[in-house]
Amino acid sequence: MGRLGIARGTICPEESSPKMAARWPTRCRNFAEKVSSGSYSIAGDSLGFVNVLAGLAPNDMIQRTNGRLDTLHSEGVHRLSELSCFAVTQLLMLGKSIISNANKVADQDVKEESWKIDWPEDSIERANVIRAKAQSMIRCVEAVSSSFVTCKLASSISDVAEAYLAATKGASSGSQVSQKSIQEKANMYSENLHADHSTAVGKIQDGLQDGQDSSQPQCLLLEFLDANLQLAERLEKESRKLNKHFVLVHGSCHGAWSWYKLIALITSSGHNVTAIDLAASGINPQQPLDIPSISQYFNPLMNFMVSLSPNNKVVLVGHSLGGLAVSRAMETFPKKISAAVFVTAVMPGPTLNISTLIKELLRKQNPQLDNHYTYDNGPNNPPTTFNFGQKHLATYVYQLSPVEDLALATTLVRPLYLYTDEDMSKELILSQNNYGSVNRVFIISNEDKVVTREIQEWMIEMNPTDEVKEIEGSDHMVMMSKPVELFIHLLHIAEKY
Image (cartoon, rainbow, N blue to C red; front, top):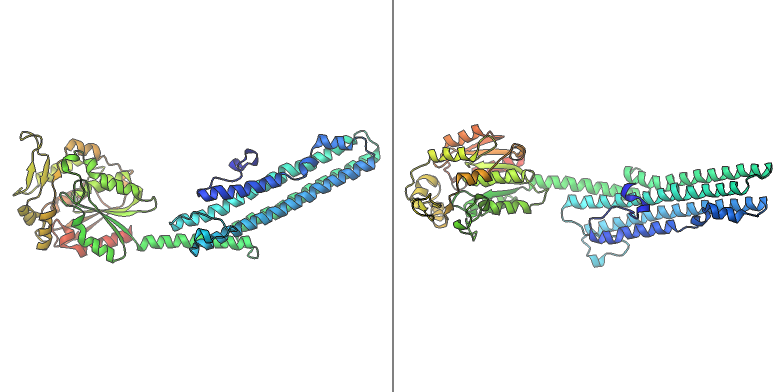
């Protein structure tokens, strides 16, 4: 029985709910103590019973021994009957608690005859709690009954028979006949009690596992438990299929605001969406010089991923430089991401290191026009921050987007800290086991002048994806110039992965 061994004082496994931890083990422990306190503990004392029989006439010894065996048998039948009632009662109490939860009955309205359980919000977790409670109770009943029947009662009956044999040792041949009769009776009672155990406990357990005998309340309850679990699993799958969670990560100098059109489309379609402000971006209060390491820049996304429950997978979407943050999240949280989408985004990987990628981007970069750099470490050192100029935004970044979106960007872009190759290479080590295990899709923007089509196709060739999609007539800001097309692609990706 392992941890269920009664001798160790552990009747059933630990419960996840604090209320249940206080209530269910106590019920089972009290029942076990009641079972263990029966008269058989005295009747089965072999040495004591030898003393009881000492000096008695043969007929009196036979009568006393028969009486003790009858007492043990009656005690066993009585305890097993109690055991059956206990099992059914506890199952019905669990059923009442389930129904109360389904009907949203407040704790103070739940009667004492039902279990008070802190039900989790997640339907799968809730169904698993139901199954765990039922199985835990059955394991407890099985442990109590098995210990009682196979250890205590069988041993007690055997001890009584042995005591009688010891008391009549060396007796006449007539007494030897009685010895055989007593032994046969002891064996019969032991066999009967084992059969009763199979009936009282085995059937309960079999019924709970198979749920075929619907005339028994406990079996009806198990059918309800199984149906509840299957329904919860099906609804959870349907919910996940129908209701996706998109996490949007902006590009350099931008913020969550850049996704406002996608946020509206995703929300209106009934899905969940979270747009992240990376550090010192959007409305994040930090300043660029406060975050000299790219890992600090990624922190808002990483903290969000930590907050997700293990069974809550998201579609992670990165734009432009946001592809680096997405890549880091893929390496760290691969099991929380159903698909990673790179929207004309920087896409390093196990076969394409960030240093090589940045060099290629710098080699193909556009004229800087009115872009702004700061040299906080002195004019003789590399620049520390960068920000887009209005002319550069209009010419290369938003050239196909509505003028209103360009105007919005000129008022909201913020300086970006320029991280060193050494820092990025250290923080963006990507493995095939983690990063490579996540479904990955690249969306090409065919009129992008920042990350040109040539560079996009080169990244895909160097770091192949599961799928490639393309949006025509879009500039670098795909979410501004072609929001509906991007939205449709994201929906298809979410449905597929």
